Length: 198
Image 1 (tube, rainbow, N blue to C red):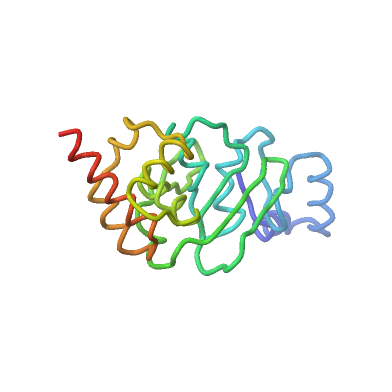
Image 2 (cartoon, rainbow, N blue to C red):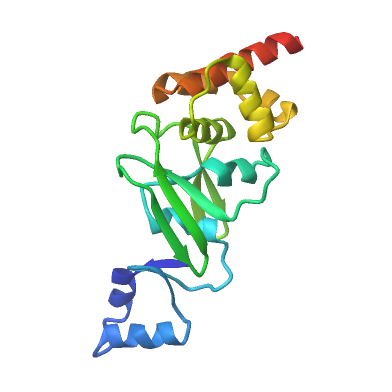
């Protein structure tokens, strides 16, 4: 279970020196320091369950979420999350993995997020559609619909079948919020793909 420094100090207030007691508990690995002010009580917890507590507000997205949904074939070794109005990329290298946080537009931030519970942990993750839009938002803009197809299939290596599973209404809703050429071309490409397949 993840706990903050203040939570633990409050729990240890019966001790004469709660800070010293915490230091001993960390030494004995009863608490594992994740980042400054954040501790975990379990050694083998999956890193993505901790991402939202490390830096936020944030939700899992970009390459991590695309891999989580099986949309991209590559293994992802960094746990990637979206933030807003931070104006910088934030990285953390911890015992639980490497974490990277980067901005998406504030307007689009609250949309297309799911809350998932695993045991005593819960986390926020972008929908398939939102994760792809976030990824395209941070990539170099393409010039036309054909180039978007190449970017999706040749560069990101997303299968046509995966693209056909995407919710066009959600992509359309999101495309108006990013102010992104790539996201607009994504919608147009998916519309063409749907039309050609019918």
